[in-house]
Image (cartoon, rainbow, N blue to C red):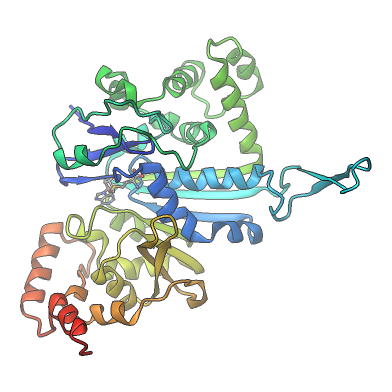
Length: 411
Ligand SMILES: C[S@@+](CC[C@H](N)C(=O)[O-])C[C@H]1O[C@@H](n2cnc3c(N)ncnc32)[C@H](O)[C@@H]1O
């Protein structure tokens, strides 16, 4: 029986724990906030959307899809934006002649360009991907936000109050559901029906799934079925559902899910991407997705003006990117006031925060020795063990000695 270990992270979105990897999928800080802050905000996406109407994204380690969902949410906000600075949106300017200050009322009509979006989602876990549209995101955390499993470290970091920075539109989950509905199998249905997880799933989306399943095998039921939808008991979902269908008119949205080792999926792929999100478990837990050889493969799939984003600040990850041919920069989070990740690009001008002298020095210590997997087929254990050997036999100085030397003023 497939087991989930869900909990509410501090922004009211669901996070998961993996006993096998002994690692969390999402930080207690907030699963949705983290996705936004680490993958979307540093991606310069707004500028990209102003200049382009076709975008291809490779979401490595899709899990329950926060990075792709945050992207779709950002895109919908962009499309529907009513902010004045939105590029390419016709401002209907009405001058209020009675008002001496010429109070200008701006209202915006939708940006009339149609976006063509392709998301390629990779993961080894089918259930997570299939369940991705159903997870609750904006839950108000109650005072007894407790874990149903034993994990003291997680428990200590759980908050009693929700902070909510980003709100996920319901249409985002509906758009994903429309793409995944035909793949949803009995195992996923059993998990959805399991009472112990019920607080983590959105009943409206489960209702919509039942509606879609009952009514057809056709992916996009249209007008005839919509009128039927009016009769179903939850009006709200009907509204979001119609909105999602309308969104599809503005959006040529393609979604492909590959359930396999990401190394194989990437090797068999022939697409070039504008953005690659790399959200694997930590390097020591999942080294196969952090090797110089995997990064060389990613190089072939990144557009010349594309960007790989990852949460890792590790010296060996940065060194591997450099050795795979990329320019490497850092992600700075304004809210946390610190560097929270790494970007890898082919076009150096896309880097806003360069590696410092200190960072570059660190790459030349043992901490910068990267993982290798020449034929992209080694197990994580084999990669870790070869890496351990290489570090032990290396003549490079250790990172702690490097830091000590720097403190003592020696370069
Ligand atoms: C940190 S979680 C990713 C969280 C995810 N981005 C989300 O929004 O939920 C890491 C994911 O990597 C997947 N994974 C582990 N090894 C993999 C591999 N070799 N290829 C593809 N996915 C893998 C796991 O199933 C897990 O979903």
